[in-house]
Length: 394
Ligand code: NZQ
Ligand code: ZN
Image (cartoon, rainbow, N blue to C red; front, side):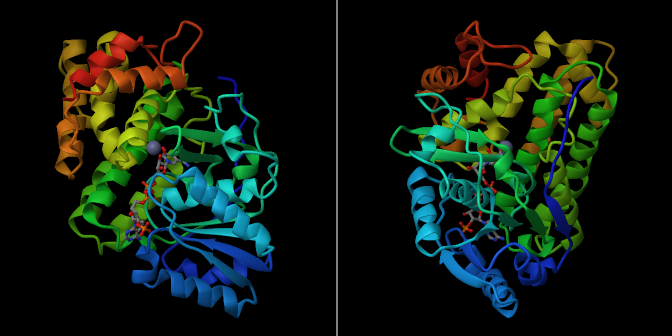
């Protein structure tokens, strides 16, 4: 194992920490762009409490409302323009992954010369990473992406019908204020999608990473087992604060870099395929993953059955002597778990009939491929293999 790891984000975690927003923010700026989504934080009172805390601490507030799920580039540009016009010196994201990602890219766009799409991995003229951003405070209201404590952001270019991402040091939030009480109002379906998302963040590393990383395997298994223990409780009773807290901490750990450190995953193939599907159909990210991940696992398990049999043994206690049978049974149980908490696991449950499967595969590979034109992962997959695996998800 060889790796380097640093995550500079300070995390403040616990029910009720929203009341500390003003006290924390005033150390970083005097005038904040407060970025929110489509209104859930207004309906549940979090927005008013955030504003009151900021004002009491003497921090000015400029609200930017209306970040949509799968946030659009035009929304990011508008937010950055507002931050500049209002001379904000701090960006606060109060919302789900979409709000946090949009706010992060707004914070970088304030200093960026030119089209912010050029920050993205899929920029047609080559990626030009941002090097500077306004300080960012993330206040997640949904447990899913881990965006609150990582340096990634995912944006949709509505004109190009592409979803892409940027990973840059300057996008690490300065502070993540993680208050599980803010997730009590998340509806059961979005709660389930978030659980699927966080689990997929660790399965991507687990199945596509280096061999010989026993501690990282255990971290990943710990995240999965925690999500499987507490996730169904949060779905069954949204008001269960303990369950909400455990799920939220799992979602932070799943993608703040710690579990992935040293695993050196060669790709995030399930995410790459899902991003193509949600760019075209605007489906919820976690719902799309619940369809693609079991299908990808079914295909990959045939190539690397020992790895998947380890997963089956450690997660589900399976002990079939036939390694491939054991591997595939674990994948079936995993799919069953996702379906059991209310995730779609078939394209038809997303309202898709499968006629665009070839397009999903083609556009995924156009967006990302290795030197031999394959989708990076273990195994690397050709376009025809991606098509085949998606057919198993019809
Ligand atoms: O917009 P509002 O009204 O706030 O409603 C949202 C939205 O409709 C609602 N919601 C959020 N918090 C709520 C709530 N409803 C009631 N009570 C609350 N407390 O939930 C809906 C979905 O929100 P969204 O932010 O879109 O969900 P999520 O957190 O799953 O974020 C998905 C986005 O993150 C990207 C995805 O691709 C997608 O664009 N990702 C970002 C990553 C990252 N930055 O590291 C990694 C992920 O793999 C992912 O790709
Ligand atoms: Zn994800």
